[in-house]
Length: 254
Length: 374
Image (cartoon, rainbow over all chains, first blue to last red; front, side, top):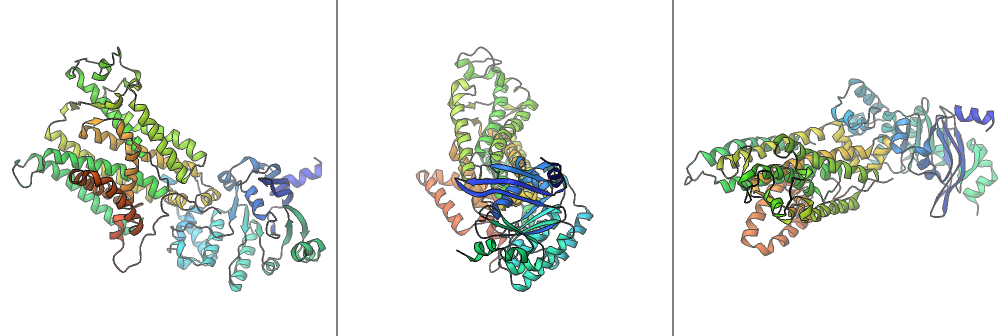
């Protein structure tokens, strides 16, 4: 390893190098490498089966890579930790299909997500403090859910659930947010509002957004990584990558 | 948990407290020919129902609130019962058939010369009580530690809990396992010096069972009401999501499972002096399945419903096994099917849903933790 490599490694928030994953012979990721700087927001695009979700699974500890290096914050080896440990380190994840706790109220969803001791006895005997309450009020306002705080989450609309999930990520206060297709199934107005919300979040968090919606990616206005067949095909601004003939072929060609 | 359910809980506790006082009074202080008299056999029967109700509340904690359908809770109940039975055996002393001051009759019969280590200390009541709590608790801890860490969930978990109770069932049948073989432990004489045959001891055991049920409800309700409880139901509804939020799901399950097993053990310990016998049939897989039916009939994730279900189903069982013994199992099966189809929230759901109003509490996902897997 050269000195330059070392610098990239230790100064990066997320460092993926040569990650390969295969399921029963199918190679979902082949030598994927990606570096994310602290505070950076990155959009990941790519056709179906490009490996976007598998990449998120590797980062969050759901899937163990067959080979490759995955480091968080320059020192934590993500391939050795499980989901709860990685989440505690400060990696939050929002799923493609909104997954909120349907039988809990909006407020309780946020209470559960709030960064706080997660051990059994801490939650069993812990008291809710006013700081947490204030934080939750702020998040409810940011995600426009203040009126709905006492509603059961299962009764929210699709868009509201997406926002609640983003709100839960905020409550978790992770260093890195992984957001999988946040605007799938949203109206244009909701999409625009979500882009604004994510940009706001990106001010003090690092964010990786996986998205199909090109208009939305353009609205985010950040560096784009194009995945194809489990590795990186191109990287740059949206205009640069959309001018790349290989990207055009993958997206439009055949 | 909602306010309506809590009000029902308060009424339930009040009724139990009332019963804990009035049943002994009516049993002991009224003449035997009075219309208000409760004969000792009935006191004993009611006390037995209350022990089943504690088991049901314990099962509801793991099934209703955490989605762990344990079909092996009868094992924890039986282990608590055996621990109490061992104390009662040691109290017989020289009054046994063989009049051996140390060895229970079955050991003399098997020609054993000395008391097995597992039986040491059981002549001392506090030690027996400790074992009532410890043995089911440690078994649940070991079992749960392996099962939850390996992420065994749903039907598979239910099956291994059945296997656990079946293994114990087989083991306790063996004479040389040292717990009385298929006859189990019986012929008890007295508990803390009080004759088990006397009406006053029966009344006291009834009251103790009622108080234990109140405590079981109170402890479980407190657990459910805490942030831990919220996290527990979140694990039930979306297990993998909870992992990504940073919760050690296996520890959450393990705690509930151990608490529940300990409660089941205490229920078993109260049950044995009232029925006068404990034998391996208490480990029979069918017993644990029946307990799950009580909870389903009464209403999962309601606590009170579980207790009511246990009492109602056992009342029906006592009646039907007397009147039409050959049809009871069909009746039980039919009841389970009908409740699952028409009363997803059980008997208590009838109270929670006044006619024409939307259901106030969402029925938790049926049977097993599916954990929305994204």
